[in-house]
Length: 188
Ligand code: AMP
Image: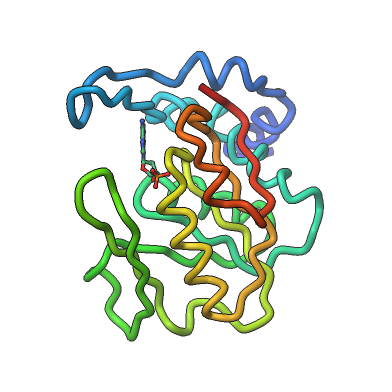
């Protein structure tokens, strides 16, 4: 057996608990602004077992339903969503901040605490009727995910579920995502 194969097998055999992933998430106070408790998931990504475990949790959140495409939200959502797409045998499409995608786009704006934010998808990113799992690292107010889900719906996709590794429950983001299947694994 090749070393890389042995390593993959090793990671798959090791079960990762949600508690272990939670313990690796680092809270950085007052980043990027005073008052924000930033949940830093980079230590999870740096540990192959925790990264694989996180991807498995997100991929299994659809309970075996067929998924054609996994959509990831810039930027940390890309990291998880592309790995989830490979695990599910699905394609990956990016939901990006305005001005980054080169082809024709559809955009959606949503309110932030101060001002607005705009996200975009390519107009041909998903096929009408395709089944999509939307992934991001963290659910806060839900504005970003609601806008992304709205774009996917406009493009004719069926949003099967929206899955996050982390949820800040005190911000009530789920309220903005009512009507969707929402999954999260680590809650603050
Ligand atoms: P929201 O639209 O308010 O749900 O914000 C979600 C997006 O902002 C996600 O892409 C998160 O990565 C990021 N985000 C918001 N709040 C935090 C936080 N406290 N820690 C880490 N990321 C955050």
